[in-house]
Length: 121
Image (cartoon, rainbow, N blue to C red; front, side, top):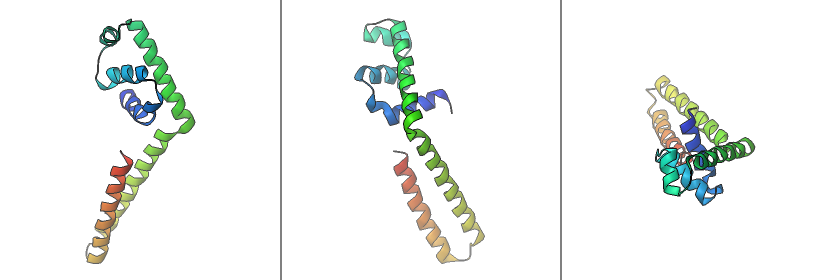
């Protein structure tokens, strides 16, 4: 997984555990794409201090994920959900003349899509 995407997801799961300064600097760097120099100017500190803070914050997020595995479980759930959706799509193709089964499949798929939307929040 790309580093930027991973950091964003880790922030989604564990961001509330960070200090307000960590959240602000992390967000400016990863979500708003500001440079270290721009963040340093905004925070009234040095570029090196911002870099160090980001490194420590990334390490914290990774350590929490290593222990709690929230992101890992979420991604596994997404993969399983997609596998179920694919299986039911194949099932619908295999029994196109059975309208009742197709109707049930559509209802089930809609429910799964709602679940997928819920899980991705």
